[in-house]
Length: 294
Image (spheres, rainbow, N blue to C red):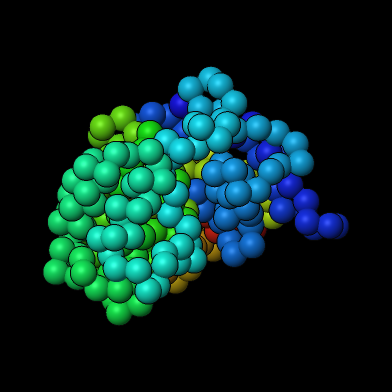
């Protein structure tokens, strides 16, 4: 597994990371989310050895990560890390050779990922001639071309159209199914929620929530219920102790409940005929807002 243990990093008086720790299992799709400036990119650069932490370490399969281990990692930065005037196929072959592949294997790997990511018809073009979405596909191919043991991706879905998102999501899911830990950051929380088994939420350099998405939904948010009462008196839920009205629409309300929900059901019955009473799991976006605002 990939372990981040107590990572701390300062830039002068600014604390970018403050004792950050979490673990990504092999074969796990792991979302790394937080507001702008929370420390996500700094964390990824430390994992890849671009930056050194002031304290803490990164471990892979129980051992500290060194330069040789990092050659077996795949990294996709948020900023374009490609040579704009170099042609797509030549560039991928070059990156494959940098990671230790033979000339023959580099040609084969570049050809495979060009086809898989849908840029075969642009293989002879310079990167600067491509759309932003196709550049993003080539950037991902560069991260994958040496068959890495770990994938670390910073905003990989940025600039992609829905078809590109689907292609990338399928590739990442396949990599995870092959046992590779895939950690990626994204502000597109609906994608993180759909794709990831587990997440870490970071704010101001500190970990504020981490774990399987389903577990966080169960334990990491308020208990929420949606209730619909036919012919109810107005604002029947207002003033109930330990109850916050989150949404109201056409007689249906969503409530955050602290304590026994049965008293809410009793109040609803007293207000009219109850046509709906069900638990609502918070979305990842709701968990995110709650975690970063606490």
